[in-house]
Image 1 (spheres, helix red, strand yellow):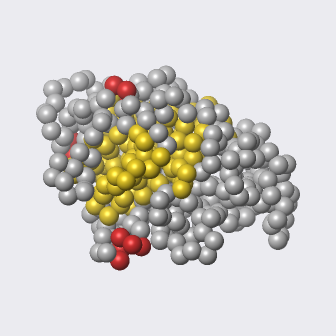
Image 2 (image 1 turned 90 degrees about the vertical axis):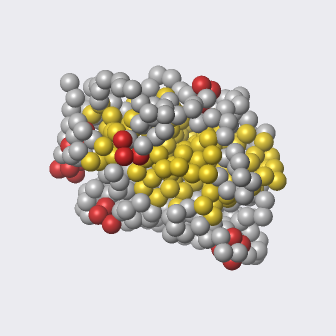
Length: 419
């Protein structure tokens, strides 16, 4: 039996799952965005913390709904996901509370969740691992080994942790995640922007890999140089080829060089083979220079899914879309071709899943996760920017929502990229 709820229930954080049992029907060969249909919905409550974890948020004030400091490490800010064969998902939290300056006590981590089920909400299954650097690959001080000890002052109630070399939001801002063919993990981050390569326990295997010719103001190796990428505009998305060896990290915003050249709507897509940048750089053109990248994954050797979004939320939100992009560049102009796949502000919801009515909208500020379940079904999730409000109401704490969307036509999906 399906379950559904209304918006009042979201405000109370009673977030039951709704799953469709619609019968399969014959589908056209080309996707029709107007026919994209919500077939599954659930959410993780805002105040979900890692059991037994250290308090956090000492550099923040929180808000009226959630006061800081927080009693543990919040399971928040999903900025990357990876579907597993058992129906659960790995989800990667970002740097914590929005900046290097306020996230030193947020431990970078990958978690596991289970959407749906009898629990009545997305179930938190635990922290898979922390990101860490036990072998000292990072060549500059990190917070939990030198950084805290060198701080001029610390907030009330906070003391420096032991030097265990667990990485925090003071060190890096991971925004994308992929699992390679050898089982190691790759993370795209924004402070550098860097690529981070870890084993399956989150331990760095090599030094952070810098992006050729690109640095943000938060890059720890800037050394007085002029940055050419705004803060928080690094690798929001990073796709991996079916062979599990080629990465395509994609910047969230345009570089200052591209803006100066009249290319303010262009996002760079790099090609990285065996962990090393090549000379290949493709471009994705946004519908507006005010838009940003949400996520980017491959579905076969040349086609990808891209979330393109505005930076608005709630009633002001207008543009939240998933595009099918082709990296083949058949016309040789250096740009990927894009076709609208899903308008996340106008998704059919004939069964009224989640209590949202016949038309479902996803009006969150940051929508940063897309994954493919099969040729017909994609998953989309948001980064709730804990402890933010505004997506579902001015005073309603944002939650991590999980959507399953049935497409109007099957995609050409490589089996190697399926769960």
